[in-house]
Image (cartoon, rainbow, N blue to C red):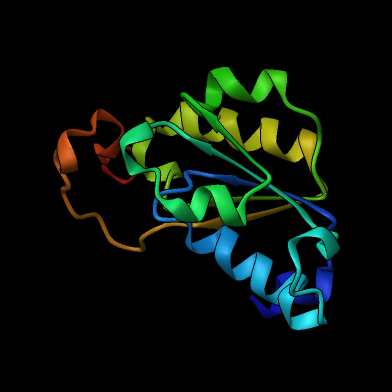
Length: 140
């Protein structure tokens, strides 16, 4: 979060929104913490991509400016570039080459990409009956 605050991006894409953790933190530290508590005063555009619509929470409607639903590899083509792209706990769900290709595309679309991923492999199966939760990258 400290790195995001130092960067001060005005447009963010959060890939794999999940519960909304990254959007919430970005909104808090880039707008609320800067004294812009009222939504009309917010200056940071935060969008997200979520492959599994059942994860949607009321946080999505309040924190994010827009959520795009679907597989990032399909949705990304229709989106603009961003100052920062966050891909949190997502990359490990792709086969290695697919993940590497996705990272290359993200680097073309943003000067800054924040990637987080587990450091150890652990099987997830199909958590919440969500086919996108399968862990592949670290296993190949």
